[in-house]
Every structure is written in C-alpha cells, then in structure tokens.
Length: 153
Image (cartoon, rainbow, N blue to C red; front, side):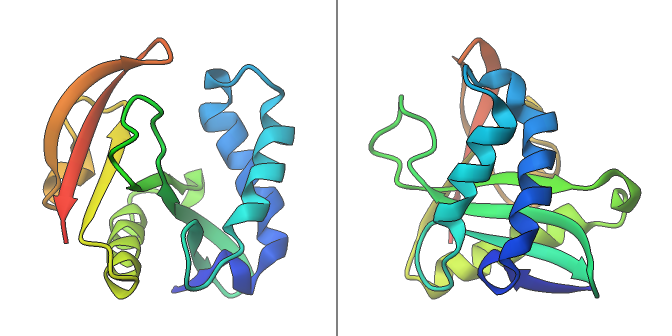
C-alpha cells in the first residue's frame, strides 16, 4: 500500500465521488453524485488546500481523506479541517483510515498548518480519539448530531 495525492491520479475522482455520495449524500439538498464529482475538481492540488490523500495498492483505490478549508459554516474561525475519511468496504479493519489521518496531519504540517479540526458522527470520537484528537463540542449540524474535534500539530 502507498499513499498518493488525487492530483497524481485525477481519474480516481469519480470513484471517490461515488463513495462520498453513498456515505454522506443524504446531507445534501442537491444530487450528491453530481455535487461531489464537481467539488472534487478543486482537490487536484499538491501543495495547497484543498487536497486529497489516497491509499492505493497498485491500481486499486482503497481509501481517501481530505485536507480542506472551512468545512462547517457555523465555525468561520476554524480554517483547516480533516474530512472525507473513507475506506472502501473490502479494505476496512486494516488501519487504513488511521494511516490516512496520519498522512493528512503530515501534509498539513508540511503546509505550515498548526491546528486541524474535524467533525464526526461517531460521538465517541472513535479512531480520532485514539489518534490524539480532542473533542471540543457536540452540535446539531444539518440535522445530524456531530462531534467537533481539534488537534494541535
């Protein structure tokens, strides 16, 4: 397994859009597949936010995670976010999500980012708590209870 940027394999955008549509499409008011496919065009960066790190095994895309800018509109002061952490079902349970999170943290550090935020529907914090993230607040966001977490890098 290796980690590459979406910018290095832009055709993976359609697979990731499909994953995100199935996982989080219910949160949108527009057709999710169309929304994600267009949105991911903005993530074709190598040294700027937003970007996507992908876990791959040869030609097989196993998972992805985003380094993004101002994810939650209710927190305009919180600039940089980890989001879209997704591992395809056949590859779950192999610590790929944890590895993707670590890669996003590393990339953020390389870009001079000192603090990241995230939101998760797992109100225990799950893998993020195990990775050193701190819960800051539980809120209802778009009719979904989420835990907002922060990590100093």
